[in-house]
Length: 315
Image 1: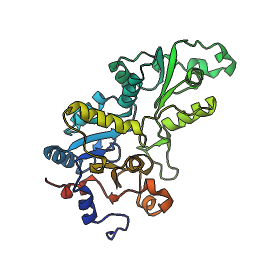
Image 2: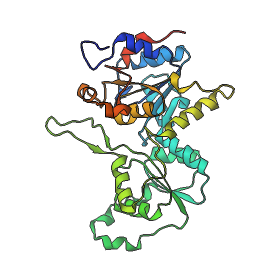
Image 3: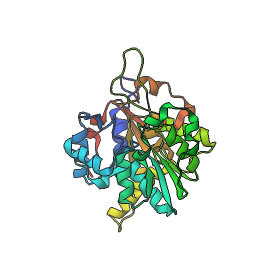
Image 4: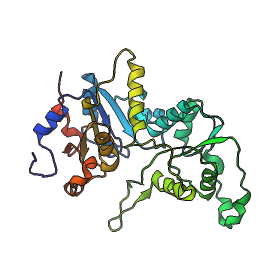
């Protein structure tokens, strides 16, 4: 059933989808906010969900921020979100590596937020800013033949790093024995060109470089649509309510703006999904989907999260 805008689901379909949901997962950028501006209706929806006792998670593939940094942003935006409501790839990766109990240290390409999460989990790391120096990169490749390498690295963790360079790639290639990697092939730009769309390389671009150079695939990928994000959300619920079983995935709803990450994440793991038009996905993207792209097809489409509020079940 469609409205006059043929890509949108009817109010009845949205109400039916939401009637049994107890766990709500929201992507952040393009769904709850765009950069530092709230999407209209997002605050009211999250507030009402909390009042009704629903479990709310903000689920993001952005690995540059820690949970504490996301909480600080939510407070600035006056959103009713606590640290236990945040599922970010920095925390997911830290938790994942911690459970592996690997010997030695992890070589990390990433940001300060990721470093904060790893330190909170007591993970021994090297890398980060120590290989940022660009002064050595204007000479020939031969200079890197004697690059100093450690003999105690048992894992390589690759996340978004705007200072990614040849030395970091060289070290990651040399160290690879296991990986915990997040993929996002590109990031939405806040400054689109009217003539040539700006596409900012994301973690997936760096991951591809490492995979080609090593001829290996990552041992695990942290971000949506992959399983560790879901496992971490379940872990948070279990820790908060150890005497209760998390609701079945049929009672979970994933709300996002990207088909290949958010919607695929929900569909792949048995959740219903809603795609909103306030971020990456445009109406033409939904209309062009074929049956072969079933994993990318949302159960419902809405203009924004504001359209979900009138259809919340009160019981």
